[in-house]
Length: 213
Length: 213
Length: 213
Figure (cartoon, rainbow over the protein chains, first blue to last red):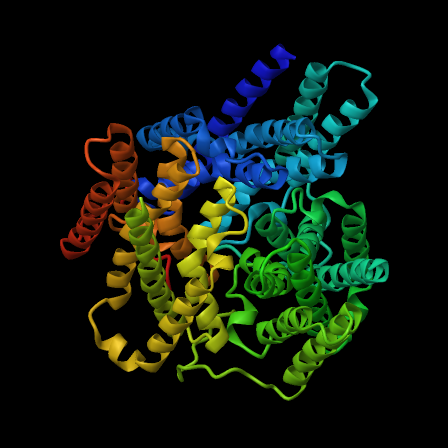
């Protein structure tokens, strides 16, 4: 249990870092000022988790009360701002870091909801929320239709991760650590494959309009 | 009391269904993918209620913990996607379903706030929030100024419904069931008449700019 | 303590009034109808505080349960609508009222978080949230990138105010009343000077794109 706690804590910080990088990169591209970049980085990193904590009654939300999250978000911001010319040249770095955070947050989000004694549906929905909430807030603040609603298997990967956590928790075939590792791997792999091979969910309509400038 | 509970439960599901249809239709028109449509449908249906539950301390929010809401939202999504060519040909179906959900949610939202022991102001404000919250989130996610802030008597109809519930609760002239039925009828009728006769609240400014593409 | 409570209450109402004016002015310029203007005014005035109250567990949020806030917001709306031709001619009235509310809300927001027994980080983050939350929601609803993320020292002034409250609370060199007065003055002055002399935080990128139409 203690081991799971450490893993859980490490995963949470790693996810925070990945999402903060993703947020800072997107904010930087929109020419926000230093505070704006830092704020978007923090919100992307902690926004989903804060919504989750409000919904499960974990008051005050972990993202607000534990300084490591804030420090990790600030470090990620400084790295992104300092090394932007390098980061920019990397192939779709935003999408890569987003995928890491996505899988990590879906799994830890679902775990925390279960830890607080809520049912499987709450765990799945809040696992997805933890994973995609920050990104959705980022896109809303940057004034565009959230990327995850339009293209590529994204939230579906988070859904898979959260679902595996809940399934593993009910079936209890293997230890919670292994459930987390498997859920993480499946979710991350699904997302990366979707990116690599341009897997998309069906779009019911045909005439695709340009929604993003 | 038990009867009120059943009515309350039925109204809640019916409102969920109506809003999910409205959300799925709007999302479909913006060419979102299947997950995006489903997410918008669910958020429109349950978003207002989730905000209400967070504000009255009903943790976890009913929209997240009761599977019928999720199932109803998914069914509404599938119907809208499957029968879109038919739905599209209907005259302003989005607005119609929106009106149904609007009245239903304003009344049940105000009722739930009172049930949790909060005062009349909280009940009225959260009745409106339950009714229009989902639609506002939908418009924010679809990247447009919320329809309800610009035109036609919409939130005012919700205000009327919630206000009648609170008044009925304080005066106690008639049973809660009748209060709910009257509040529902007045609110829905007001909204439908506003749509039919293009009733608008005054817009203080004259030169109306095109805000929606 | 009682004196602090009265000051706290007065500041809260004054901040509500200032923010409501700012919200109503922005909404009016976008040609929203009377309800839309009133809603934006109320949300700008109480939105940040409601998020703060949800995060510190103050259920129901003060903005929803105390009628003076709602009345103050309505009065501010009516004043703005009634005297718009005058208000419009004033030089940047929105920005001025925004600055007043900014300093007031940062300080009272941080104070309330401390009052509820949360740590310094929560108080600083929620002080900023109280101050800028309403404005961010306003810009999101009016479909533009939040002003505070792009230009001028704004949230930084709120950060300074909240930080001084937390510092004063830990050091206890002077009474809470004086801490509040100093924090308010510093925060408001910093914001006004930034407006006057166009102080900006560095924008890491050079080619500034037009984001607002």
